[in-house]
Image (cartoon, rainbow, N blue to C red; front, top):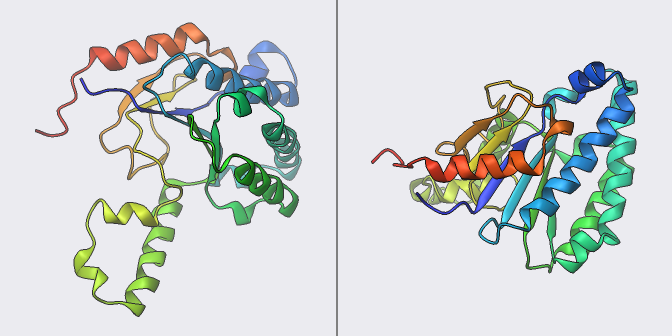
Amino acid sequence: MSELNSIAFIPDGNRRYAEAARISLAQSYYAGTQKAWSVLEWLLAYPKISTGTFWMLSAENFQRNQNELKLLYQIFSTEIEKVKTSALINDNQVKVQFVGRKDLLPQSLQQKMEEAEHHTMRFDGKTANIAIGYGGRMELVDAAKKFALEAQQDPGIIQELDENSFKKYLYGDSPDPDLVVRTSGTHRLSGFMPYQSAYSELYFTPKYWPEFSQADLAEAVQEYYNRKRNFGK
């Protein structure tokens, strides 16, 4: 079994958790963002895991009602602002990167995201990718458009394009996830990183994201090492 270097999370079930726990949607979303902070801290116990990716807002989520989106934006804004002062981020040199269609987000939120990225751009510890405004099909279409524009200027790159060189047109610049963890009992990726997760191991737990524990993370990691990855060979 190859080393687990990159792990990605689909933090599903916040709304169902609110209903089950009989709390407000705002409380549930806040609990979900705090859980992401906790998971990032737990990852520090795994020296080999260099990258953690969290899918916090999908492109499809923009179809939700405006009040719910405003609530999410407020929570994201508050949490992103913490990056510059967080001991977890600064003491451990965690580089924060945002992947997705940032232009679909409010300008004020985009500004805070840029400031957080700039603040951590030279950090060389772990990397935390926050997928916000992210859709897998959208990413592939945007990548195809970028490549087409370059090919117009330099047709020679068409023959040079391969599976590895295509990655530079995707959002962000991180290794493919070795393991994808999804909470809430839903057994699908819902378009999450379709190109990068082609050979990812998948782990599903019935727990809602706010319920995800350090023991659950340890179980997912152990499950990964119990499997044999052949990569089609």
